[in-house]
Image (cartoon, rainbow, N blue to C red; front, side, top):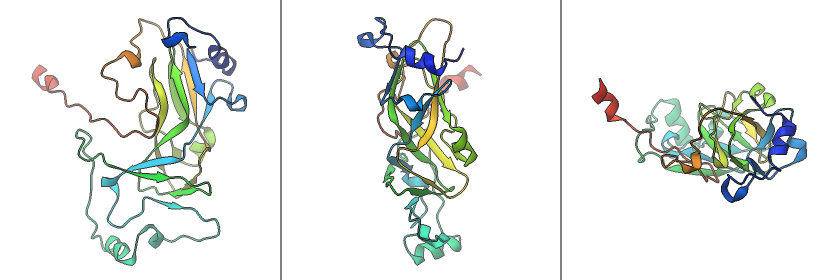
Length: 233
């Protein structure tokens, strides 16, 4: 059962002695009344993006600071004409990510200026919400706002679901279908809450949890290869 907007706000005021420091079941910081919807709360894009360095072709820019008075060309996405010509000739080396190893997880940090940042459909960007949230005894999840989706901006790939006990800013897995301008503090998504049944296994108490307490775009933890699965066959 999904919580309504007024119930989200009510849950933020009810202290629960079973929670850490007796806090409410829902914490959202900062909180603005105008961002509370019928059954969700609007989330905002922080001013930092990160890109895996191994996904950037030689001499290419992963993003461009936007100037509304300028007309952009494909060549503008390259550091120089040499890099652009190499790209046109198909001479760029293919680089990859190994999701099961830490070796390829080095990130490039990009600040989003107030005048906007142009993203490319060639890249995936890790962003984060301005909002810090804590959730207890409820199931949180996020999704893009309708207007965000209609501009073909995706805010998560498969990781829109949170956990009971998750604390932190939400990392966003941002992709775009077109060259798209984003701005710091733009409304980027919504958080929802659902009730659940059964015994609790809170995320913040789970030793295998990787992302509790994250405050900025956080790269992926290595994906385990469970050899016991093979041994089971």
